[in-house]
Image 1 (cartoon, rainbow, N blue to C red):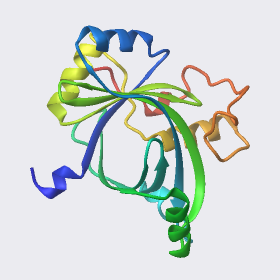
Image 2 (image 1 turned 45 degrees about the vertical axis):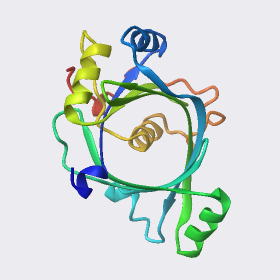
Image 3 (image 1 turned 90 degrees about the horizontal axis):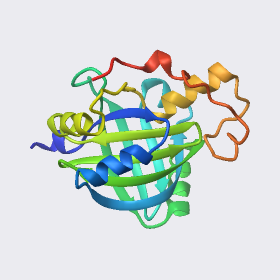
Length: 207
């Protein structure tokens, strides 16, 4: 594996009504619980010309059990329903100080998003059960063969994939529902009803 491959994020995202049947299936398949359910706070940054989001580039500071600074940029999809991105990530010791450094370099906090995440390992793929303010999702990340093996085992009847980031989903939902807020937080979504077909435009065929 070359350096480029080591920093390539390949994943499949699937929306589910509830995680309960997926969690049960993971246990039946002998998946390993890699990380217990944890709360994540993410801050997305922009530059003064607001060029990152339109070009699908991400500069993110994340706090969960540790603090990580991440940069992502899109790569051509490996195949239908799969999102492939270059991902460069480093662990830092101080969230607030890293935020100040980014601000000194000309970046600013564009928006905040929250989620709860539980992480498993199945067939060498990372399977995360994500709870976001607008719904529940399963993300499967790894090499294409491991991803497909995990998808087939967890969704034997097929699954509708979403080849988009959570920020893309939020932007679409914000426009569709004319949401007045800019941050993807549980507090902001309290009382907001998200329709079942909210992300229809971004769905790809089952597989």
